[in-house]
Image (tube, rainbow, N blue to C red; front, side):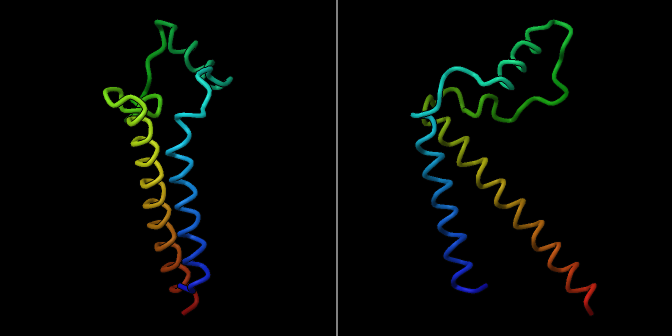
Length: 99
């Protein structure tokens, strides 16, 4: 990996982590349209979720604001790991096609 690319990735990760740390303090408590629609749908007794969310409302309840930060950081890390795995698979597949 070129140093320029590596520095860009590191800067992107740092920016994501800063946003994750700050967002619980600056985010609105009023849900947006999608969140509000989901809440209304879930208040219907005939509706049951297919899968329970691992971190509902992007938080770990007992930890308060710290729980929101931890949930966001975990989400970022999981997304990065999955993206990296997909990139490695695609890179290997691309090399095999060119040989």
